[in-house]
Image (cartoon, rainbow, N blue to C red; front, side, top):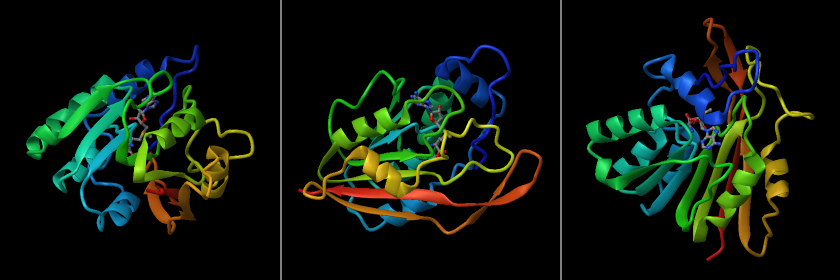
Length: 217
Ligand SMILES: C[S@@+](CC[C@H](N)C(=O)[O-])C[C@H]1O[C@@H](n2cnc3c(N)ncnc32)[C@H](O)[C@@H]1O
């Protein structure tokens, strides 16, 4: 994946403007394939309800819907959601997915789900990620799963302003979310290094962080 485009110099654009512009630059940005960690974590589960926070062009939500899940995909970009809806229709799962155009900085899920996923919820413009992930924990139904996959580090070609001290490890993220052992069974880890390709065709071995937390029933 190439999650690393950059805002033009000048005043920082609003998230919706930045991401709509980002998606408009290319007909399709992401691979259209489901996230490998999602596939690994979910394949054994019986379908339920899911919400995908920052769903982009919808590949993960559509994959879940194709496995029988009832899915809500949320994104700040109307352009991405338009593509997601068109792809869901092509895949024959439109009736199982609801697309919500929301800024997660200002909106949080108003019901609970058996799966709450946030996959590469990173942004070069304003994104209160920890605030959003705290809201995500509240949206997990008893017995349900929180799955957060993110970059361990931005790739060398990225000009993302890395937060001071770097991106959080999965363990640091779990600690910041305050998931109490009495209520949550938490597993954290890193994926095997995968080779990612940058905008100029350059490659780098990337590690992703994975936080998987099951809310005790
Ligand atoms: C790096 S992309 C990841 C997309 C997708 N989850 C994936 O893994 O391919 C980040 C996504 O988060 C969305 N996003 C960024 N800020 C957001 C916000 N404040 N509220 C909702 N979505 C946001 C972007 O529009 C973009 O689709």
